[in-house]
View 1 (cartoon, helix red, strand yellow):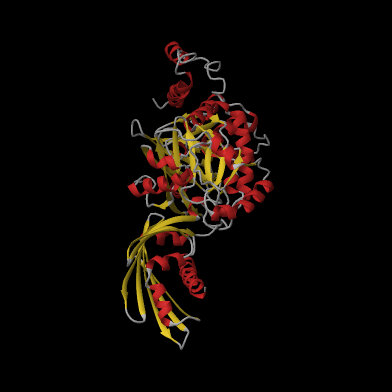
View 2: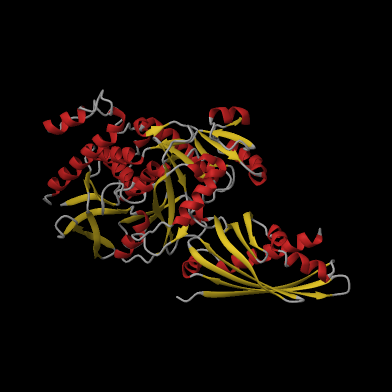
Length: 157
Length: 429
């Protein structure tokens, strides 16, 4: 079984200028604080942080300990251009590798900003096997949306 | 040799089933692939759940746990330490969970007490001094092998045969029924045949494999939970994190050690588990939030237990979220499988399985295991007819410096005797 690639994308607008949005999303120490379900984190350098999340897989999972699992990951800003930031997230969940590439593009809308995002998740073989028991696709989608909503909340403050 | 019931699996579920059915008067043989308790049951974390852990997410399992917690303390006092347990709130999220948690405790009828933080720190000086709230519940500690061997010996004394190193390798079907069970004798490598009216599949993570040997299509995914054992006992009580059940949230005082559990990882083969340094570091890191000293004492060892996620055709996914399920198969029509269950609810699983089997065999005799004091509760009085050398060796622990630690040694001695005599009576020498 090859690793499975899942892709999600979306777009939203915030009432903040582009520079302010870019300042936040290129500053890992601030950006990490916006991600929901982060248990703790350590900023390794300007572009890299180690983060521990607790991920809710849902109560339909028959084993209690597997319903909420802890995931250790490294988040890295791999590129930051004028209006685009790319993050790479590598970690392990439930004993299986997981890798996410997140691209965020910020467009100036005259005082406010339009944010387009695109996430590609690669799940390890073992985690994919869990797809027989839970809906992995909707789970990853929910985690992506929760993360983006976390950014929106931060930017709206 | 023919039996009313063959039970496959010598873990807590299979053993209590063998005992329950023997007490109802059935002729029972239990087949264990390795040694009694060598699978998941002998690698549990030591917690006899009060049910508190599940009051929010699995209220039904919570009620079952507290009832079984009380029963187990009554029927196996020698295998239980009534430590009590604390649920501790360390951060704001934990504190936010407290109200829902307490409502759940009330609904499940679990005794609890909100403990003043100062009192909790006096009682448990190794607790994190930053702890924000503490709730006391009737968690207990169960000594796994003491209990498992006690159930096995009790079942044997009630007439069951307990055969170790006997792996089920196939079934011969006649129509829609299992006519005989093919068993590989681990001592001689011979394949033997056993006839039985009913087969109980209580093989835990291997239940899917056993069912597949009988032609039942199952989808199994094993998951592994790691436990880490630390050099010292750091608390009197079980310490739980006050949050929805997750990984890394239980610290159990087990004898002179502390056991931190557990992780949750998907694996491919229940016979192949590996524990990484990351598992140990993770559990130490999570545990030290409740008891900081954990990060400073030596890790003695780590071990892992395997539990399966299983899908069986015809079983509702929502039903699969329950603690355990008893499944009577359409074909073979004389096989019953149990999936899931906790060590704490092993007796109840045995009762439910036996109810199903008794119905299949046309018996209305009810279960009596809830009031049956297990062998070992009065160990030295109950030693019975052992040959002279075994009896004198077992009795030598009584009144000695090692009387308490010797209990499991004596039970192991007896377990060996039970297995040997079972083989002899099966004619498999």
